[in-house]
Length: 313
Image (cartoon, rainbow, N blue to C red; front, top):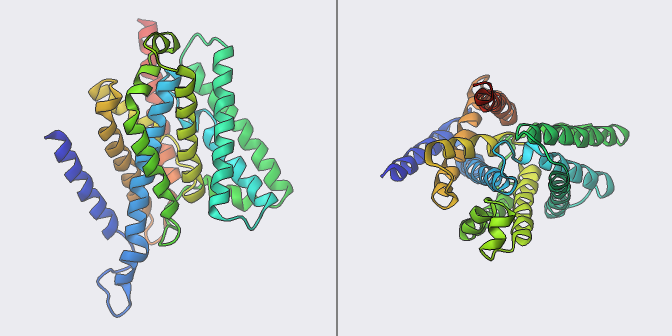
C-alpha cells in the first residue's frame, strides 16, 4: 500500500512537471500545445530516467565501497566523465552523441577504478575521509579539465557540462537516456549479488561469489549511467548521496526491497529541484545542478555532523 501511494504521488508530481512552464499548452493558435510533445514530455521522461538512475548509481557505489558518503560526484566519477567529454570535443569536434558517450563512459570507468585501487592500498581510519579524498581527487581532475579547456578555447564546453540542466531537452536529444533504463533493469536482476558484495570481500568469497567480477560489473554500470547522464544532461551532484541514505534510514539496507523506493525518491528530488529552478525566476531558469548542489551540500553536512556525534559521546 505505501508503495502504491508513492507511485500515485510520483505520477502527480510528473503531471505538475509537464504542466509547468512559460508556454501555454492550451494556446492552439500559437501552437503552444506542440510544446507538450516537443519539450514537456521529453523533459519529464528525462527527469525520471536521470533521477532514478543516478540515485541507483549512488546506492551501488555505496555498497561496493561500504561507505555511505560515496557517490559519483564525491569520488571523481563525474569529473572523469567530463574530462572524457572535453577531450572528445578537442580531438574530434564533429563526433556524434554516441561517440561522446562511449568516451565519457570509458573515462568514468578508469577514474572510478583508480579511486577503488587507492581505497584498497590505503587504510583510512574514518569513513569521513573517503568522500573528502574523493572530492579532492575530483577537484584535481576538474582543474586539469579547466586548464585543457583554457588552452583549447573550450571553456564553454566545461560551462555547459558543469551546469546540468533539463532546459535543452527535447525530442531528438533525450533518447540516449533510455540506455540507463536497461542498466537499471540489470541492477534489479542482480541486486542480490551487490547486496552480498556489500558485506565485504571475505564474506562474499565464502558464499561462492566472485567478488572482483561483481565489483567490476558494478563500476561498469555506474560508469555507463554517469557517462550517459553527463553527455545528455550534465553534472547532477549529490543525488546518489542523498537518496540511498534517506531510504536506508527509513527502510534499512536490503537492496532488493529498497530499489523501488530509491528509484522513486531519485525522481522526486530531481523533479522538485527542477521545478524550483523553473519557477524561482520565471520565465528564466536556474540550472538544476545549482539547486541540487545547495540541497545536496546541506544534506551532506548534516550527515557529517550526525556521523561525528557518537564519537564525542
